[in-house]
Length: 307
View 1 (spheres, rainbow, N blue to C red):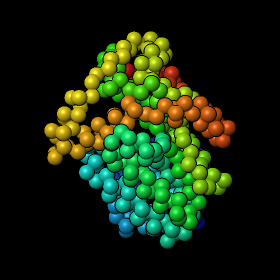
View 2: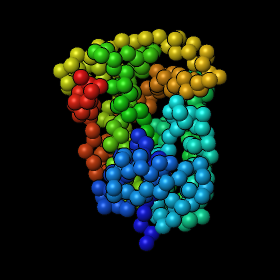
View 3: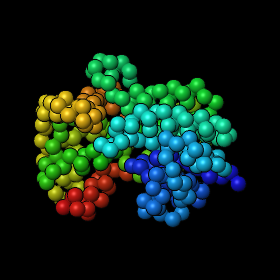
View 4: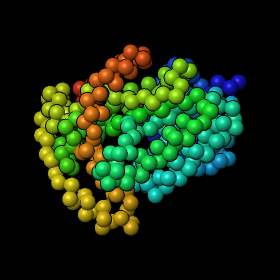
């Protein structure tokens, strides 16, 4: 019976939440993973795991058997996988879409970056490879015959907590005046509801929390929510620039990290100003309770990283 939903990138930062949200709705969910045992630890026993690699056409074809819809949440932005960024995020995704078409799949949901502004990238003179790749995939979807929806995701709020060292939030460049962020749990819920709907065809939806937040404001709110005083400290970008140049031949990850940090620091404020309206549209369109920064701060303080 063709009732499975395949989540590519199902054990990743967003994918695991998409899988859990779909399972909570009683859906049959399948994930493709290079290591089935590890995937089982992440996703539990309810999801079906197909062991294989997204770069393998044979693996993807097997994973697509009996599938009615596909959600793509593939990411290779890690030190280990960064050298295969184009292979994993572009070439393999386009191949998977080709195989999905052959398998008769009609519904596709694609997790992309929050917004793609080519004029902005040119102005900053930044070659943000991941954004270019996402643009290629989005263009392919727009020209395909799929019933597709693109979900644009900003940084998760983990970006605030990862920059906390002890009692100080240390931010390269200081960050922008305001930045949209989202909870990965909210991404999971919105994506799960999206793939089950047929009325969002051909739409690009920006996922965000209730408001855009600056790093100093995040430090203040985390302090208030947890009772743990977090100070904000801005550091220059120059050391990261130098490190990315020096290590470029052996460590391309730093170059991509620098591009991400620069983009974050120059986030378009006209887009940030639209966050309340974008969020209200989400609340009106989907059935979920948004996760606030304070809620995530409470979870963070309970972990080893928050003590």
